[in-house]
Image (tube, rainbow, N blue to C red):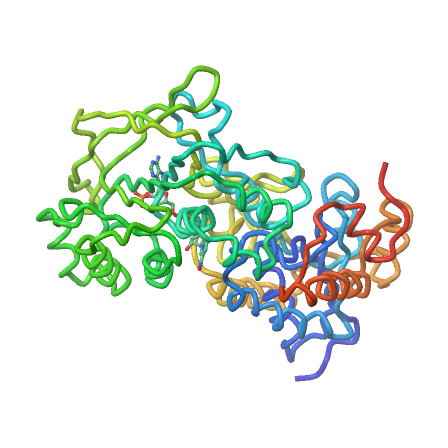
Length: 467
Ligand code: NAP
């Protein structure tokens, strides 16, 4: 197919996996020559790969090599430290691009909706994750790790990450890229027991198998599972044997069953998995002192799924810290449609709709968590982005993208020079990356993260700091 005479100008908002996979898919197109500009609010790219993936998971982080390849394309540009919606509006982007792809993920957390949720000592797990990963907005949080027990609510991979991070030894952590402030605080942590609460059973947990296996392989923490908790109810057993279940669930049950048979080795810390247990209230006089929990049983809902039903049997688990790890939640961007009920941008296969179930909004597309909700592993975003880019290219062929009255590549640069003179380009990011890696080398760490915007801009060689 012949190349179109005019390059297709695409702005992608968000430089995490979904944004980078969308950029890569556009670059691979044989139908158009795409010029892709990726914007990020932070001076650093890679979204949750930098700010979400646990520091002791370097292999997962290695995916950035793919993104570096995409970023090295001559028609790719990165503009970090630029907030779309405040520094530059979506309307202004629309004058300079044929299409805008929203790839900004889900920045907030889902709430439990119980009393005491906002007591000091009760945190969204996402805050803790961003803190230990050196996200500049969370750098100054102070977690009181002086108590002996922390409770993690939720049975997803974020809950597993948080439990593990609280259980890892200083020796295990100090060879990672965990933020220095977190390394220090976690070294002095007095937490000895981490209780992980699942409202349903082991068969319904959202963990993936490697994450469950890791919990049983920690240097200085025993894993404790009550044998009664892995005795499956009739509904779970039937479901596990049916085609509706999956290998992950079956294997999780096997692993938890094996854990329930283990004799604790008397390690310094314990991770206690409690299933069929929901928090009903977080209690304490001015700060978290415990969590009132209620035992659940599983009942079949109208859609055939097994839901947690409270039994009325309650107890209080003393604890000084609570991490609510029940999922992320998307946040609206001014000027862009938002489905409040699902906390996503309403879309049809990646084409943004003016409202849920409404008409497509010409030139606007969406990928990743803000498209489908906060589920799936990093790789899930690849297929997701391909679907969106396919729709976008169909619209290009049908002449259904934005008119783009200012198609020159420089048009956005002059606006950035005026609004965000301290924006970070890809070359600037490479300077930051080099500085962090060099700082890590003598310590045998992959990098030492710079965790404030001024430090990052300094390493980038960008001198103007936003007021
Ligand atoms: P998630 O996988 O959706 O898990 C959320 C958990 O919270 C579920 O166990 C859910 O239980 C529970 N929950 C929801 N509302 C609750 C309530 N009111 N009370 C008690 N429990 C409640 O979310 P996530 O852990 O935030 O992870 C987000 C995505 O990132 C997932 O796809 C995850 O796999 C991925 N991730 C992957 C990795 C990795 O690959 N290593 C690491 C981190 C995150 P129900 O099932 O009963 O609703």
